[in-house]
Image (cartoon, rainbow, N blue to C red; front, top):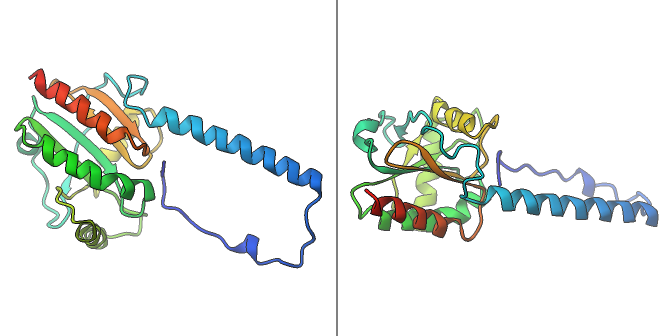
Length: 215
């Protein structure tokens, strides 16, 4: 999971003159590392699920306030994703490693699902930080799409309204990346996938097809 762009530091590598740690200290560090790995495993297992365990499932759709990334034109949601349709709202970013791993498969799956006129894919390309402009975001997104040969809508949330509303539904201060919300025809959230797992896209496809078959 990637709530924020990764940062790197080389300070730990620049002090060769330090003596080696005591063996007892090494043991403590290995124990802490093992505990951290276990914690990450369990958090990822929980957040990588689209099950009903998410706090958002059963709640109304978040407020959706999006623009076309290339033009900046506001999206008319009554036309783009009308009530009664199955909507997949997806938050991702080119700066997010797990997002880049998942997005080609997800976009390809969404193309197949879009053969049903009742399915709508709403992928939101998100900024890497507060200083990034919409122009810069569009350029990075277009470069990534060209490099990966992706065909997909390109949407943005310049005012942050959609992300904040989604985080509120999840009862979190902010979103993890990537995050997918599947919204049923009645306007309620029926599934949430936070973070990347190899099986997530297949789960999303299966859940979407089930909803579409019931319309």
